[in-house]
Image 1 (cartoon, rainbow, N blue to C red):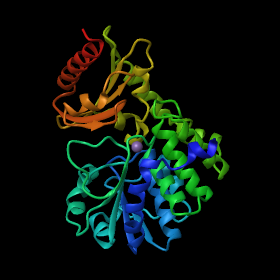
Image 2: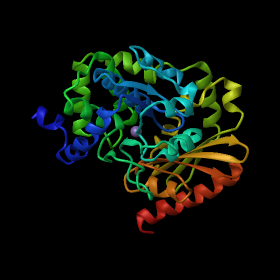
Image 3: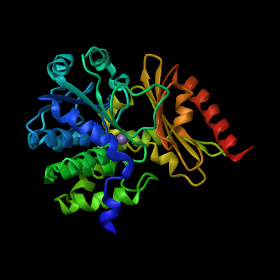
Length: 341
Ligand SMILES: [Mn+2]
């Protein structure tokens, strides 16, 4: 039975069969993901780079924003991050592969250079298809718990070796995108693959310490300040905000902010949690985290963003107070609509 759960889902085989010859035909490949790469993006990129190396393909990572310090352990073992070379590194590779995004639009400052490449990107993603068609061929499957699940499928379909380092990278992807195997995307297959990855050499306690127990003191001071902004609405909308200067004052980097939205979401009765981050210059980043029955992706899209049904984001123009009021009003309406009020 375990083998059945871990087998590549039937609906994924045809897209994989179409993707693999294109992927393996390239002599050199650039791998990229969204701005502010997360554990799934970084883990998927590192694993894919090492898998392609097994096929003799020269693979480099070219991201629009710097590699997060907390995932530096993924760059051991021969993974090459050439993000500092930017568009030149993209142009030098024969093919672009994007992971954890469906379109190059999410590549920030690298998006124009990605669009200018002669070949369309190969896409490996698990976000629901957006309003635009993905800009290339690939495997896009929202039933995958993480993009890393699809990288695992590439490895087993192609008969490649899941080394301890590749297993660690894929485990990072699965662990972080499921919130530590707690969110609704923690499927039986996700846990079956995690079991395989542990068998392949992952140490779950080391991973727990790396991801969830390596907090800086500054991050805790920042958390104290963020919790001061807590707003709980009886309708089931709870939110917190990060003031513009807070990261600098506490010496915290943006990639340490993962998980802050879990505090408002963890309050009893919360249906929708919101995290507002004032980026300054009249721009506010909003994270939407929902409980069953509320489509965070739909709500984020109404503000020009998107994501998954339970976790989504948007970049909204306006002051922190203005954006917070507008988004909270829309959030209360979404919660009321879901109740049929
Ligand atoms: Mn993901």
